[in-house]
Length: 228
Ligand SMILES: O=C(CO)[C@@H](O)[C@H](O)COP(=O)(O)O
Image (cartoon, rainbow, N blue to C red; front, top):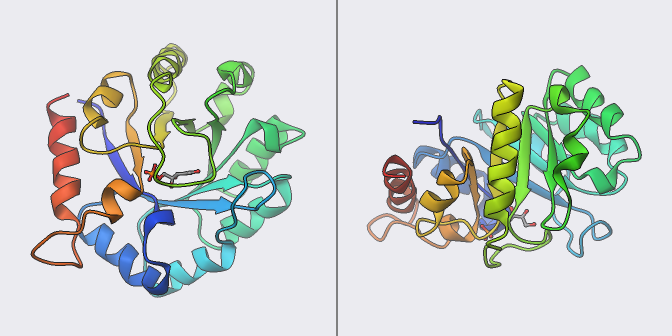
């Protein structure tokens, strides 16, 4: 069985008590915290910056934080997020003038680097940089908002990304983001994903017996993965 990771997207958390929300979701079994950064320019929404990432680290969060930068241009912010405690920094090929340079910049700070593919962005951007990525993120919705429906064409793209990763022999994670939940996670895993971002599916499904826990929904996702 692949080493599956579940990464709640805090875009759907209660921002009024974000530190507690992240603590709760980690205590409920989350592996990675997915941190969506939107600039109201590359995508039509505005969310959080490096200060929020730093605040989570100061709050005591030690889980990996996966910063998905939906910002353009991206290079100037990379160092700020790494200084703030990011474990992964991923960005969109459309947001960098020099993709190879941006990937190297991330790795040069000792951070893991990733490229993100919108539904209509071809995987050919990987052609000459496979050895410089630690993560490939396939968007299964158009970026900018939580709560959208999974775009089925992402399954073919995941299969193609998995083929490229296996052919490379490199330890690259294959992440999927958008419309993922307990009902479709098995099919998505069979297409090749190993890292699953889920925002609304997790944060809208607190345990009925304890509003500070999300074990129920995370457990359902793990069971579906185990049976996939
Ligand atoms: O990056 C994004 C949206 O741009 C995602 O991380 C969403 O936050 C996923 O939300 P759900 O589709 O799981 O509600």
